[in-house]
Length: 292
Image (spheres, one colour):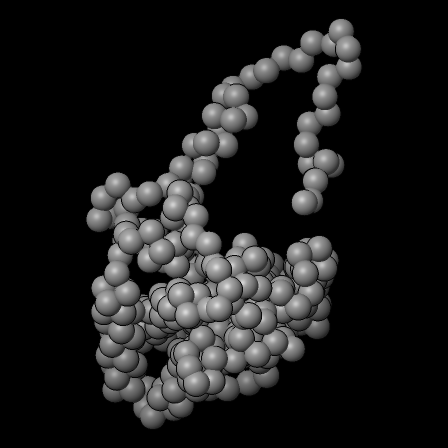
């Protein structure tokens, strides 16, 4: 329905010859589609597809940024850093898998006919729909990752103290209720899901990571959490845009469904500008070095 003509090469004029170099566009497109969406051919490829790193790494960035900020403030214990990064990564990955499994189960119960594309294997949701993995297997993997995350938090508690559990509990609460009944606030519209993403993936993980590493608190991690929180919102925003039609059929009222695809592009551009502008403002106010 949408023709992005400005991104396409112009057709040659009559009598004009165009030199073609490299692989034909359709061949390059086919290779890219196979790499992104092709059926896994081995257990390793299936596990790699389940990781869904294009989304998970974006959501993990606030934890990494808070860790780097805390490290910059003084000497830290390397074991604390490892437990923090690995524990939060396992939590985010486990929650991501749970969210896809919940969406799949909810789509099966939907009154609307949610079509599954059999050739698409882009996310854990698609792998479930195609029968590449069962819901029980995905749940075991998801909660195994959450268990590993909890064990890492126990290790951090022995290193830092009880405040670790405060940041972990409030972050886990926001993330787990995002797609899980009875709260399932990502389905309620009015940008509530995106606000939960800002807090659960962005602000609390960054501020908590800074505190765990530096064992102090200041306004610096709060300021830095704003652009990185917007980064997580942009990651989820883009992910929801890809599933816009499915979410609309499932009555999952994400902000993308509310705004529509065209306005979503505008909001995505605005979020991108705000992320860079906020980092520039923080550095200009001398809260961070200009090299940031």
